[in-house]
Amino acid sequence: MLLDLARIQAENGSRVAIALGKTVDPQCDLEQYALQTGVIIFHIPSLLRSPSPLNDLRAFVALLRIVRRFSPDIAHTHTSKAGIVGRGAAYFAGVRKIVHTPHGHIFYGYYSPAVTKLFILLERLFARISGKITVLTQKGLSDHVAEKIGKAALFSVIPSGVNLERFIAGNGDAIRSSLAYGEETIVGWVGRLVAIKNCSSFLKAVTIVHEQKPSIRFLIAGDGDERSELEKKAAEYNLKECLVFLGNRSDIPDIMAAMDIFVLSSLNEGFGRVLVEAMAAGTAIVTTDVGGTSDVIEDTVSGILVPPSDPEALASAILSLISDKKLREKYSREGRKRAVQFDVHHTAQCFEDVYDELFEK
Image (cartoon, rainbow, N blue to C red; front, side):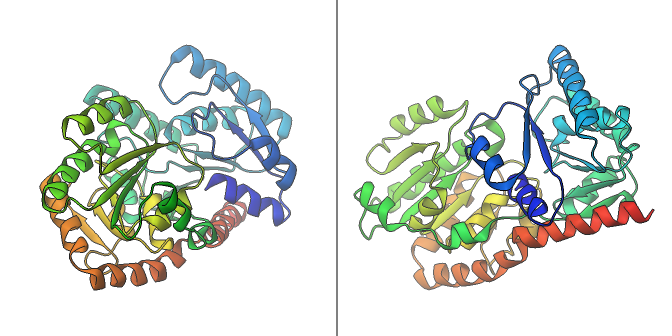
């Protein structure tokens, strides 16, 4: 989303730079991106996802130098960790127009109660130097206000924008051909293989579905710390013949287009951007009702919402869609229509409005 947003801002005449830390799974060649868009890229090796006092200090100093060198009118930080370090650096560099977008939050589901409390205290502190905090959903706004990060007026709801054209144009035939799948129904999962995404719950649901519908095929696209353990479980569950781990892929639009049913099994989602991608690809959706997913998927209209950590409910919803092609087609149509409101160009305009508001104060 950030790459698309920066590209559009540059096309509209703004001078734009992105400072970023280590990217585990780059989605594009950033050098080529910079050449094509004119967006300046600064790499900060010490800016890492996990908390580390020494690395965080190094990242702060590096960002301070970059901000002073680039001298922006607006500093816009993204995600919780970079939002703390980045907002601090921008403030001490003299930038007073600061926008922060957490892309979800870490108020539950990520860390121990003690660490979570520390992050909440830091968010309260850095909210004081933020001109605006944009959240992805109304639920995200409510969570921030409930944790006393700031008053409601500090926040604006701006959904994560998706480049819909890529997913609308997805071609699933090549994927089906490469996997030797013909007309079989395909159920898929896409995301990072980490605890918060709870792919293990999907895997348990797969075993239930497989027992009743052995002809169904399953895909898991993505990588992460839990991959080896999940592959071991899949082998224990005797799923080798029906389930494929695809790993990290650059052709996710095509993979989604190959799916008949897309499943999200997360314990927490700030928004559920992948749901918009799946809707744009025309895939029927089953998702856990967590975080902001209900702001994206309207239950029984554009998909099915189920409780988190409930493989039986997940399996039941999947089975209902397998057995009812007309229902899948209905969710596909409604999902495509609903996805339009999450187009990245709309998101870019919303951010432009936020920037204009800050300069009017």
